[in-house]
Length: 99
Image 1 (cartoon, rainbow, N blue to C red):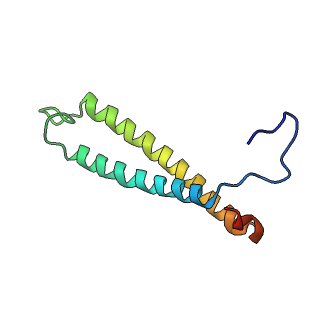
Image 2 (cartoon, helix red, strand yellow):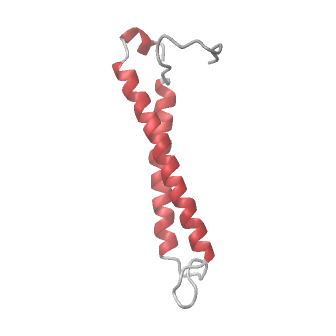
Image 3 (cartoon, helix red, strand yellow):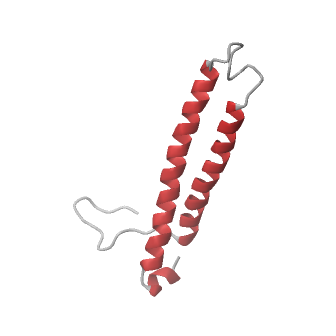
């Protein structure tokens, strides 16, 4: 939705119920997937994540950073979805009917 510069919307924009649920589900799914990935990475016995001395390798650190960033993004996306759901609950009935 575009607005001309200098004008403000009379009410805040809200997400549809479908989009809010999708974002919330994406956040939950992201946590599920990446927690499983980190558990498997930690238990890796193939030699990719840990060398022969048991020290973490570059592979481990790169994938751990990837997982942490994904946790943060998944959380942020899930929170946006949750806030969208809460906004729909508090919206008047005629606004909810359109979503």
